[in-house]
Length: 110
Image (cartoon, rainbow, N blue to C red):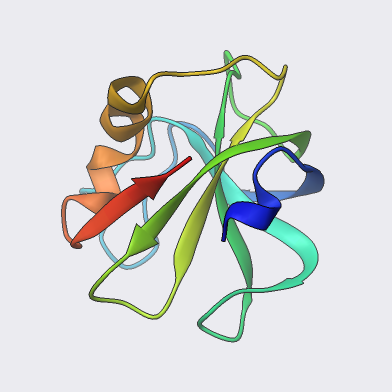
């Protein structure tokens, strides 16, 4: 998990900032959410990422992995990517991803 922190990754945003979750329409994304092309996550699908630092919806991204949210009661981890390389505090990251991660037990790995 820690080996990915600090690496630059790129991928596609499939749930842009302001969009609704496809299965839970009351859940609105306050950050861009997508996946890293060519990297398989714990669920067998491409690796999911939360993308921080965008002022609006994105279609694609490239940025630095600054943290991993390790889900303790699920099979997949979520990478946290900073678009411009800015660092965020643990509290800022947890606040940004709480909209979805509140349904899971987990820990932030830095």
